[in-house]
Amino acid sequence: MINQPVVKLGIVGVSRDCFPIELTRTRLAALMAEVKKAELPEVHDCPVIIENEVDAMKALDWAKANGINAVCMFLGNFGPEGPTTMFVQRFQGPAMVIAAKEEGKANLASDRGDALCGVLNFSYSVGLRRLKVYIPEYPNVTPQEAVKELRDFRAIARVVIGMHSLKVIGFGPRPADFFACNAPIQPLYDLGVEVEENSELDMKCQFEKVASRTAEIEAIAKDMQAELGAGHTYPEIINKMAQLELAIMDWYENHKGGCNHVAFANKCWPAWQPVFEFEPCYVNSRLTGRGIPVACEVDLYGAVSEYMAECASEKPATLLDINNSVPADVIPAGADLAGATPQDLYMGFHCGNTCSSCMKSCSIKYQLIQARLMSPDITKGTLEGQIAASKTTMFRLQSNSDSKLVSYIAQGEFLDIDPCSFGGIGIAAIPGFARFYRHVLVGKRFPHHGAYAFDHVGKILFEALRLLGVEDINTPLPAGQLYPGENPFAL
Image (cartoon, rainbow, N blue to C red):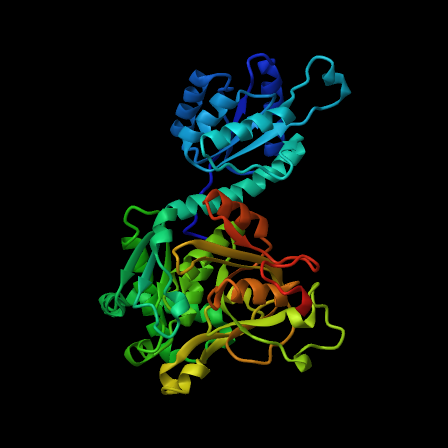
């Protein structure tokens, strides 16, 4: 996967001056030994133990000199909350805190660290400085427990760092028929995301600009043929699709500007097909599979959501319509619904933008819906088939009409059941989805597109959203707990 930040995590020990500094030093060494054993990449311990503000400045100098872009504050004992939070404030990158558990009764007589208490003072001081810091559900940990928290934090930090250096590039006006894609972009700037909007004519010019690079186009076409195998059903459009991939990749390389990472949100109908004479879906699937999301229908927030899902999972993601119900005769008798009820099932569908590695089987086809309005010959290029059975996290970050960020996260599975339909499609089983759909997706006016990670990364996305300052985070509620405004008499 390209187009994702590399997290270089610094662990900074802190010690209150009335506690032995050796307590923090010894406990930090034990922690780093477990980190090494677990082979966590790019985790570095700071040689400076922070006891005072001067130490905090020295630790900041170390972090800058070593390219540290995320930090874990480690309370080996109670810790000095002022200098500790001063470091976090001036560091400015994603930060977490963990604290050392007492090892055993032998330590309690004279070498007690009191870090359980220290986290309370740290949290209070964080509030005074109006900082957002990741504090795990159980922040007081053994070295072995700390490794799990550090692994999760690396993923959380990857999402946050990626968002702070992301440019979302759109081609074409957002469709009038899908007002849900026309969300205010001010909140993207508030998050630190850059936005570049272009015309469909810009992509046409770019497509023609790279036409002379025939060797590169032929190499991409051969790679496409190898990927598709028997699914390479329309050889007459393979070079056109390869040319589009080269055009988008060229734009990707040359339009990052001051950003490090890019996601695309491109117009894909109805004017596209008469002009380009093929569908862009398969090309979109390939780029998304490599870590460069290309969202459909100029869905800027969909592209950003896909990017966050990819950073959280380090796997390809996809963008799907929350599309249609599942008839009873599609579900085999005795099928395992992964904790969902038949009412909770639905089909996630799009024309053909899901990466082939996430499909059970797939081939190039023509887009049936669009072919009702135009010649099937110019709607070839969708990647269609059943989405492979897997864990999934459906996720959306969105601006509402008041320019306020809202989001949802729900975990479930794609089932290994034939959807009996067309497109890139799969049957999603999300426990509690029926009520979640009515009272969150419909009730809070979310659009029809959802981003899907092919793993359970709800914890990672939830904490990343909180660090990014998103407060309205919606998740499925268990039976017996009402959504705001839910009618208890209708259950």
